[in-house]
Image 1 (cartoon, helix red, strand yellow):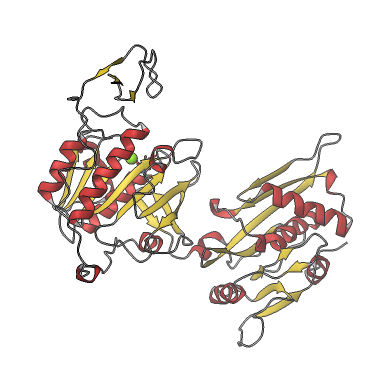
Image 2 (image 1 turned 60 degrees about the vertical axis):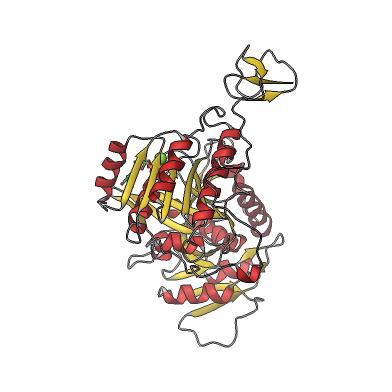
Length: 451
Ligand code: TYD
Ligand code: MG
């Protein structure tokens, strides 16, 4: 005999005063065998499958569907695999609905697309579509929170693609509480089964909680083919797409967007976007570095501001877009090797454009920016600085140097500081000047950053 919570459906072998799942009091009742516990693995939405030789499994529609959004296609590994299930996670307000409405419109060129929303009314979706300038007749909207009805419409319409916005807002009749782990998992399973057996490409939206974990959605990550996070800061319009799992491609790619008045716009040339290699002179404290984002080299500008600390107070250290611990370590190396007393100074470091640089190849650029501000000496324009800094101040080799060199060359920079001991420096003819540096002092003296 089992007991069941009448509020959320949680079952237990003993009677409980308070439900551990939904937290309600006095909701447990005896569960009768006729209760709505339908065998979970016999869903009506699955087409009848029988075992068959692998060689007989048809494999015709394997080419990928393009979302017509290059940054997204790349993160997916070259477009959507028909019939695959993709989970898009992100904090509320980051732009998930906006991105997938744009995708839905683009895919409607291939056939009908169903946009199921449990979060907004059809009118609200229409308002967003108008703002984005979308108007396809093959984009069908269904606003509702019932899983059963959603699946029924999905089967009836049999679209090329379905968007579910969001997995936390749709529930099964007689199922668990809205947004609970159990409910999210059931929903994930039912949509995945329906989609797989009919080759309907499925895009699920999942909210990530403030603390950053993928709480509800995380529980269905094993069911889906691709999981992508949509990230960004409130105060910046930069948005990044990062794959966390991809059965059909690499998870080392990155998609970049800007949230604009009329929706999301791709950043097609990130190096131009994050660096200001323009005709005007660099200001003291500005240095361009080249950071790898997965397989993609991106030129990024780092800015440092070093000012005298107020007397007697502890010096301020602020970093935006850089790893604070790494930066502290670099300051220690600089103090020790160059006999600088940084204790008397406030230091602020910032990465231009809201980008995050997490690579040690930016080390040398960070220290150069700090010294450039400290001595108030400009770094010559059209210079890029690459190198990891070791504890004794030596400049260490970085990976993918060839790719970084060609990106720097492509963008018209003239001088590139690189680790002297790096592999891949010889051979090709270059239109830029390579400064091969051994350690930080060597770098600083070539840039005249000395007293
Ligand atoms: P939304 O897609 O609703 O976010 P999510 O589904 O992840 O919760 O986007 C919300 C924000 O994006 C909102 O603050 C308004 C802004 N926005 C734009 O700046 N431009 C646009 O064209 C749209 C549709 C939204
Ligand atoms: Mg939304």
